[in-house]
Amino acid sequence: MNIDDYAWNKHEQKIKEQTEFTYSNPKIKIVDNHELRKKVEEGLERLPQELLARWALKVATPYLDYLDNHIKGDARIKLGVNTLENRIEGSIRAYDLRKVGFIVNELAKESKSDVSKYSARSFAQAIATGHMRGHAMVSSDYAIKVVNTLTNSSLDASTKERKRQLRIIDDFLD
Image (cartoon, rainbow, N blue to C red; front, side, top):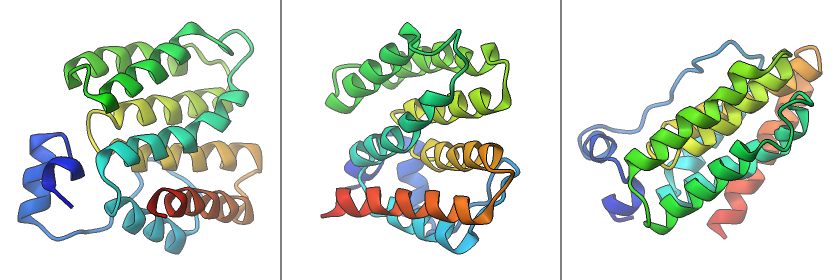
């Protein structure tokens, strides 16, 4: 894959060219299927940033149903999706996307429940994937945090979510 397709961010391009792939550790505390998390990371490495951003959005959007009622259907959600789409199409700069990312992140700050906060963070990280690839895995981990919150940290539920994330990767690779 062409390095410009792999990453739009020059820093991430440089890292890709200079270092071998390594697994990341979650930046948040989650109960997770670590083997499947590694498989997700391996799969994401094979996606160009355009598809990676689409993948992250597809992972995060189902959890918008868990936003608190006062922010469900908020205009910032549509703004985030439209801005990410514009970034994918190349009609806006990363700077413009980052500004909207901060606006979208306000949904998490305005959340009253934990499940809403984690759902909003997953979504905001998905939008940020249009700026840097690394946000995709954080978005994915926040989706796991939502599942943990909904299921009293059920490993079976986390495993089911990781399998869903892997199926979405497979759909993009087909």
